[in-house]
Length: 289
Image (cartoon, rainbow, N blue to C red; front, side, top):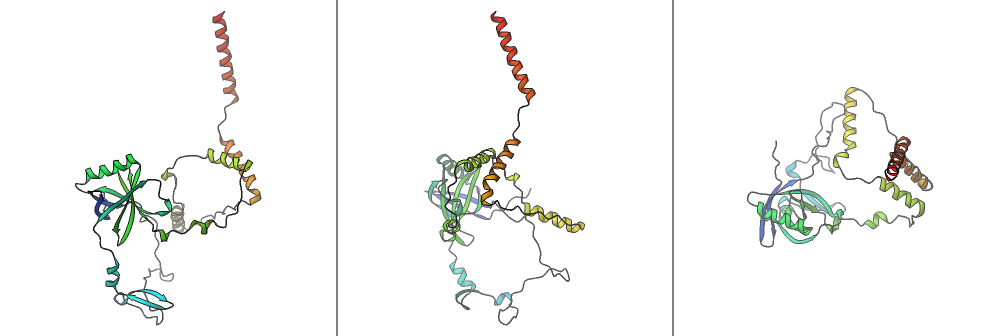
């Protein structure tokens, strides 16, 4: 079994307590199917070359620098040492600034999750922090320099350990008003709302991540297999959206379909149950007599 490699090592500090921890990636896209760019004529892989946008001449790596555009075509050049000076110094410490209710932070601020585990002699303090937050139903807001940037991290109990989620900065979050300002001001009520509630109630379930597969990955894998075998894949037709006038009818059909799937008692079982109850009443009457 391959031992996971920690992405970062440091401390969580809350009050006067410092706990040594290790940070591991919790979600990764490394297992996804990846493509190479090829020369269609030769079938060979191509490589990327940076060229001067005016002269067209290739620019070697040692001649490449960062630049910030201040006006159209006018740049401020930043040397590697200039960029390095802007990176904040790191003391490898997640400083807890506050404990907040677990549901207080909007999910839209969540960036990337990481597992936090105790490092060496930090097990006791680690368990103290984990169990204390779990009992108080709170999460910790901490800050540290992580991967060259000062980041805010939300730390929560997770199974036997902790999970730290980097948070997006406020300026990175777009206003929801821009996305929803075109919604018409409609009031849904009556039969339409009741049918929608009925369908929702019949489809209630629990989240099982294994039940949700990556259909794109599966489709690409099947496409590659079909290419190797020299066969074509059938094209699926995309479903057409319901028109406003058809919405009520679509709800009625969906509700009827869901109801039809419910198991019904057979008439034989009903008759058997009635006969059984009748026999029990007859037996009681005889005992009374």
